[in-house]
Image 1 (cartoon, rainbow, N blue to C red):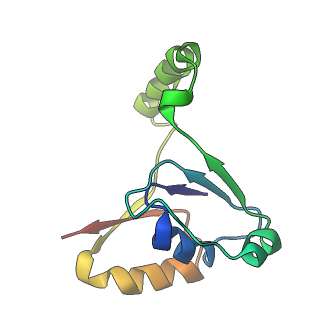
Image 2: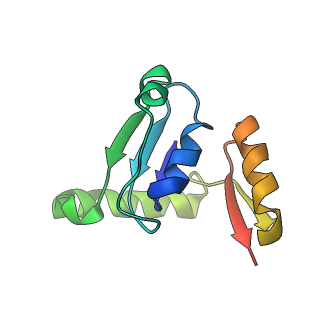
Image 3: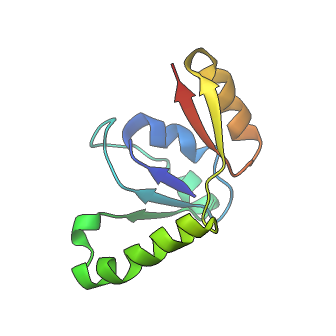
Length: 110
Protein backbone atom coordinates (compact mmCIF):
# COMPACT_ATOMS: atom_id res chain seq x y z
CA UNK A 1 0.00 0.00 0.00
CA UNK A 2 1.15 3.51 -0.80
CA UNK A 3 -0.24 6.40 1.22
CA UNK A 4 0.31 9.12 -1.37
CA UNK A 5 0.61 12.67 -0.08
CA UNK A 6 2.46 13.93 -3.18
CA UNK A 7 0.70 12.81 -6.39
CA UNK A 8 2.35 13.98 -9.64
CA UNK A 9 5.73 12.55 -10.67
CA UNK A 10 6.50 10.82 -7.33
CA UNK A 11 3.34 8.71 -7.70
CA UNK A 12 4.30 7.83 -11.26
CA UNK A 13 7.68 6.60 -10.01
CA UNK A 14 6.17 4.57 -7.16
CA UNK A 15 3.90 2.66 -9.54
CA UNK A 16 6.88 0.65 -10.81
CA UNK A 17 7.70 -0.53 -7.27
CA UNK A 18 4.19 -1.80 -6.46
CA UNK A 19 3.31 -5.46 -6.23
CA UNK A 20 0.32 -7.01 -7.95
CA UNK A 21 -2.87 -6.13 -6.10
CA UNK A 22 -1.38 -3.04 -4.44
CA UNK A 23 -3.48 -0.12 -3.30
CA UNK A 24 -2.70 3.60 -3.59
CA UNK A 25 -4.55 5.85 -1.15
CA UNK A 26 -4.37 9.41 -2.43
CA UNK A 27 -4.50 11.94 0.41
CA UNK A 28 -2.66 14.98 -0.92
CA UNK A 29 -1.14 16.78 -3.90
CA UNK A 30 2.01 18.42 -2.54
CA UNK A 31 3.89 17.67 -5.77
CA UNK A 32 1.17 18.73 -8.21
CA UNK A 33 -2.47 18.29 -9.15
CA UNK A 34 -1.84 16.07 -12.19
CA UNK A 35 -0.32 12.61 -12.51
CA UNK A 36 0.11 10.78 -15.81
CA UNK A 37 -0.16 7.03 -15.17
CA UNK A 38 0.39 4.19 -17.63
CA UNK A 39 -2.85 2.27 -18.00
CA UNK A 40 -1.06 -1.02 -18.66
CA UNK A 41 0.82 -0.78 -15.37
CA UNK A 42 -2.43 -0.21 -13.48
CA UNK A 43 -4.22 -3.08 -15.21
CA UNK A 44 -1.29 -5.49 -15.22
CA UNK A 45 -0.69 -5.11 -11.51
CA UNK A 46 -4.41 -4.74 -10.70
CA UNK A 47 -3.68 -1.54 -8.76
CA UNK A 48 -6.51 -0.02 -6.77
CA UNK A 49 -6.41 3.79 -6.44
CA UNK A 50 -8.62 5.41 -3.82
CA UNK A 51 -8.99 8.97 -2.72
CA UNK A 52 -9.38 9.85 0.94
CA UNK A 53 -10.11 13.05 2.78
CA UNK A 54 -10.93 13.20 6.45
CA UNK A 55 -13.20 16.13 5.63
CA UNK A 56 -15.51 13.89 3.58
CA UNK A 57 -15.90 11.26 6.31
CA UNK A 58 -19.07 11.33 8.37
CA UNK A 59 -18.40 12.89 11.77
CA UNK A 60 -20.08 9.95 13.53
CA UNK A 61 -17.58 7.53 11.95
CA UNK A 62 -14.62 9.67 13.02
CA UNK A 63 -15.99 10.03 16.55
CA UNK A 64 -16.48 6.24 16.72
CA UNK A 65 -13.21 5.08 15.14
CA UNK A 66 -10.56 7.62 16.14
CA UNK A 67 -10.56 6.68 19.84
CA UNK A 68 -10.14 3.02 18.81
CA UNK A 69 -7.13 3.91 16.68
CA UNK A 70 -5.61 5.90 19.55
CA UNK A 71 -6.16 3.00 21.97
CA UNK A 72 -4.52 0.55 19.56
CA UNK A 73 -1.54 2.89 19.06
CA UNK A 74 -1.14 3.34 22.82
CA UNK A 75 -1.33 -0.43 23.34
CA UNK A 76 1.38 -0.95 20.73
CA UNK A 77 -0.82 -3.03 18.43
CA UNK A 78 -0.48 -0.49 15.62
CA UNK A 79 3.01 0.34 14.46
CA UNK A 80 4.83 1.50 11.37
CA UNK A 81 8.34 0.29 10.60
CA UNK A 82 10.51 3.29 9.79
CA UNK A 83 13.97 3.47 8.27
CA UNK A 84 15.66 6.87 8.50
CA UNK A 85 17.80 7.64 5.46
CA UNK A 86 20.13 10.60 5.02
CA UNK A 87 18.86 12.97 2.34
CA UNK A 88 22.01 12.49 0.26
CA UNK A 89 21.30 8.72 0.17
CA UNK A 90 17.70 9.13 -1.02
CA UNK A 91 18.32 7.92 -4.58
CA UNK A 92 19.98 4.68 -3.41
CA UNK A 93 17.28 4.11 -0.79
CA UNK A 94 14.55 4.55 -3.41
CA UNK A 95 16.21 2.00 -5.71
CA UNK A 96 16.63 -0.47 -2.84
CA UNK A 97 13.00 -0.03 -1.82
CA UNK A 98 11.83 -0.64 -5.37
CA UNK A 99 13.65 -3.99 -5.48
CA UNK A 100 12.67 -5.38 -2.10
CA UNK A 101 9.36 -5.19 -0.30
CA UNK A 102 10.42 -4.51 3.28
CA UNK A 103 7.04 -3.14 4.38
CA UNK A 104 8.86 -0.25 6.03
CA UNK A 105 8.51 3.49 5.51
CA UNK A 106 11.52 5.53 4.40
CA UNK A 107 11.93 8.84 6.16
CA UNK A 108 14.47 11.24 4.68
CA UNK A 109 16.46 13.24 7.22
CA UNK A 110 18.66 16.23 6.49
